Image (cartoon, rainbow, N blue to C red; front, side):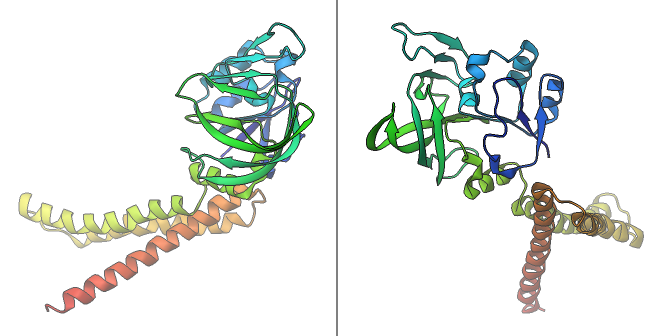
Length: 303
């Protein structure tokens, strides 16, 4: 799995930790590899003012099918319009990529915040902490397809203390996410939701193995009957051995192979993916053993 982070003029990829996720630097010279990513992070900075997105980069981002996470200025370039005329009597409009149906207008917030996450396809109802550092942060959703994601509890707006106040700070549309909260990914519960969505977790290995350990034994019973009653042929010992091999050998081989490889990886995501895959498979095998034990106990009453 690969996660890219945009590093172009106006972007600040070192401004925060981004959950310490292993990322690949994306700049003007390698925009084509965006297609191969599982997730693209567009960090904060001054991307709106710098006009640094080339046409090729815009095309790659717009056509990207996987997760896009824009933070602060990265969020702003994903929207429809940004009014950067903070002290202007008339709006000064910058056009975004229009991937999120949102319009921005001036609202200054430089403060540490607590935020709430609204349940979405990727994230559960969660809470977290981070900070705001923006000049254009008044968010207006212009289409119901784009939905609220985060609300921040702030104490200060436009350099004035306001007391506790909740403001909309993030939205999403399908797998495109934007938030004004820096350190968003540094919250463990947020990373956990993201990992689970990307199938880097226990349940990925569990459901994969559950399919093999339950479906394959079912086929072991269906195929002999089908062959005997419809094809009028005997089910041979060789076929029986082949089915057993298909059912278990591949899973056992891959599990042993991944176990041996895991110690050579230092990346947290890779280690997590391997170890959770193994744990999920082990749980699936254990569950199968328990289920079949009780089935045999039940059938034994009638024999």
